[in-house]
Image (cartoon, rainbow, N blue to C red; front, top):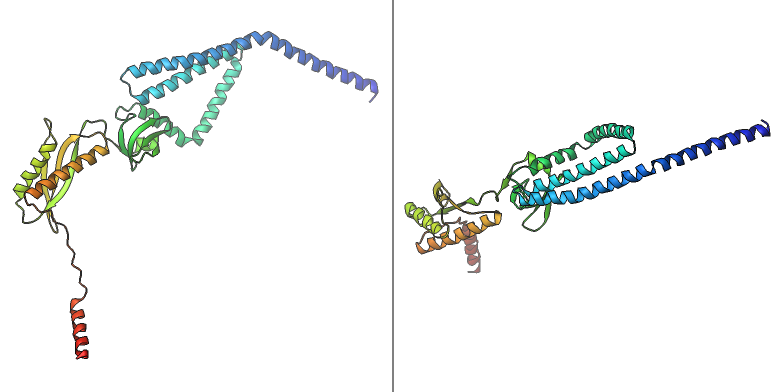
Length: 303
């Protein structure tokens, strides 16, 4: 190849490169206003989403909607506004084909991610369901999945409860939806159940009257409520019964406090009326007969 041909090809390549660069510069200059406008629009939508979500949050706080619904609704509202701003910005840049490609790619990626993150998506949808359950709110005391405590947060992934020892337990939403849970805070009154026993020599009718009177003095029963007393079985050393009564209960601690007061009152009433609460007695046999015979043998030897 001659030197002149090399020079010509080099010049041609350089001219093509220069032309492309100039075309890019012209395109950037021509589209610069649209680019700036698109950025401004996106920033404005982000700012608008921030303050609009705060306004929606205030509206929900003034309404009777529960906190979990408010939290999820505010987050979804904010994401939708920002997404709308992104679509408008791409439209300003005449990137409709790019937008279509992004949506198509998002669909494919979403399908793949859906298969890969089935558990996570399950928790997310379960979180939405939980947020709209009126029987479960932040601040409630619940028992579920072998844990009990106050609900301190409900998000799209998990429910966080604070146990009595002030530790935080994170329970996936799917576990809450798929398992039963007991909510102490949804009712202002609860029934307390106690089991005890009295000696076989006791006057059972008198025991029932004394027990019910002891409970009535410290736990007022509202209309429609009553104290229930049932003898349940003949035990090994006692005749056992079950006692049920109503009181104000908002969490497990209230249950323990009520049981504590009831036990003190019942025991004091039984002491005043000489009612025995028997307990099992074990007799240990150390082989007394054998020990006595060995002692006699030792004495005979000494004699």
